[in-house]
Amino acid sequence: MTVEVRKRPGRKSKGDRKLIGFRLATEQADIVSEIAAAEGYRYVSDWVASVVSDRIEHTDLSVIDHQEELPIGRIA
Image 1: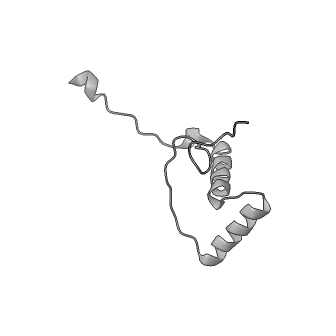
Image 2: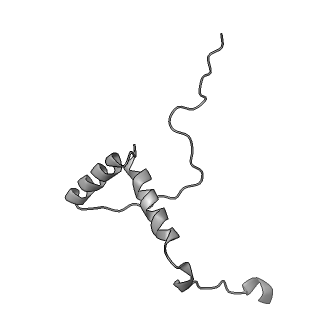
């Protein structure tokens, strides 16, 4: 009988990520932890990521002013 051994401990990679850190008042942070647990999230950061993703999904991104890249490569 062969036993499968995971090559790397811990949870699976979710791909390329970028840290966005911020601080909340302790009372609010406690509420966030309670909500995340109540909604079945093991990690608060997963809950926060889902909230941000939902907000992005329901935001009209066309109203955001994006500055275009200067055509330096074409000029030089």
